[in-house]
Each structure stands twice: as structure tokens, then as C-alpha cells.
Image (cartoon, rainbow, N blue to C red; front, top):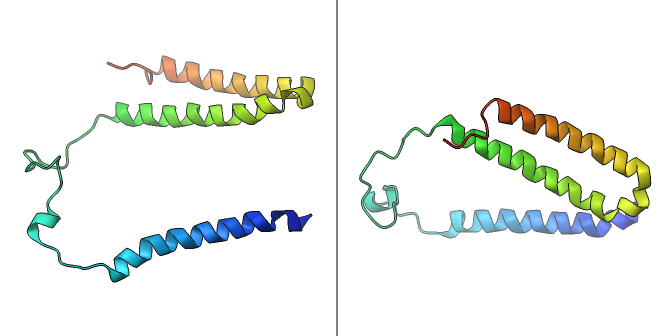
Amino acid sequence: MLADYVPILIMLFLSTALAVIALLFPTLLGPKRPTPTKLEPYESGLRPFSLPRRRFPVHYYMVAILFVLFDIEVLFLYPWAVLLRRLRWFGILEMAVFLGILLIGYIYAWRKGGLDWL
């Protein structure tokens, strides 16, 4: 039973090793010649005409968090849709509870103004 997971563990190890190598080699082997031009913030090839640190309204972060939450919900719906015939009534009931909890969260975000765009 555990032998079934060996290819997955090998793939996980190799992908992690490749990511570490891809991050370390340029850092260790690349040239390190900082100049004032390289240290400037890049703004579409133009000289920056404002301070790089501007305040963003918290609303943008709320929209981003809500997007991530409801996007993850869709990820949970795909396996359920594939296995729906095998799960029968238990699967439908389980997904109804899951969607009900998400609906409560959606209504809460809506009433608190998290979905207002203006």
C-alpha cells in the first residue's frame, strides 16, 4: 500500500530539488554589480514620478481574500462533481452542507459591504 506513494514522493522530492536549484544557482553564480540604476524601482521603463509607497484602500485586500476563498470553493466542487454518482445521497447532503456554509459566508460578506465596488 505504501509502495503506491513512492512515485509521488519521488516527484515531490525532484520538483523541490529543482526549485531549490533554480533559486540558488543564479544567486551563487550570477554577477553581483549593483548600480544606482539597478537599485531604482522599475516603472514601465520610465523614471518613477511618485513615491513607491502609496496607501491602498483595505477594500482591495478584502476583495482579494474573498476571491481566494470562493475560488478554493470551486476547487472542492470539482472532485465532488466527478464522484457524484458513487457518493449518492450522502455526497449530495455533504455538499449541501458545504454550500450552505459558503452561502452563509457570502451573505455575511455582502451585508458587511465586502462586495461593494465603490
